[in-house]
Image (cartoon, rainbow over all chains, first blue to last red; front, side, top):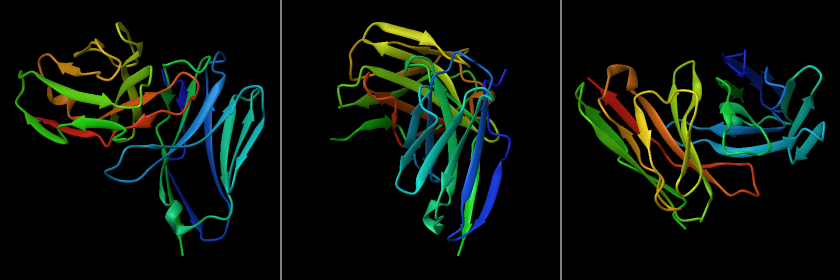
Length: 112
Length: 112
């Protein structure tokens, strides 16, 4: 049973426009959510996180939105840059515990 | 700081062979985890540990053993390799106070 789902395997966006990556979760006990970015042949790198007590968190061009009632989070990248082209994973945990569950990933392509 | 170091980077095993994937971190992180990445499946948690002497199963633990005798090291053992264990394996660590795991660069394992 996939507890964290990213239903879009890929997304293509023009440089300078907004990229919106989506993630759904089924476990209502999750209270901490993260986004990771991964380039080929490298390990994932932490991008941004959000606690369930918030509905929005910003860090530069990256904003994560959390809708607890819909069990949905999204990552907005504005403006998108070609260097943002990578696979993006969302992840979730309970009580910021050691058990972090990932989604399947969405491959973002930002075209010049 | 080396971060999270995984060895080897590449390995080919024959079905039935055993081996240990090594993982070491020099950041004094309490939490450590092992993930495998397969196409279309994202990152799946194999085993994790919240401190020396404490380990627990993740989503896909079968066929793998772990132990955590020190804070720094978290080896992953394949007892009898199977072709289904062909994958890229990532080790990660984090401190209790921050939810973002730091990942190693991965081990690409092929079982023939």
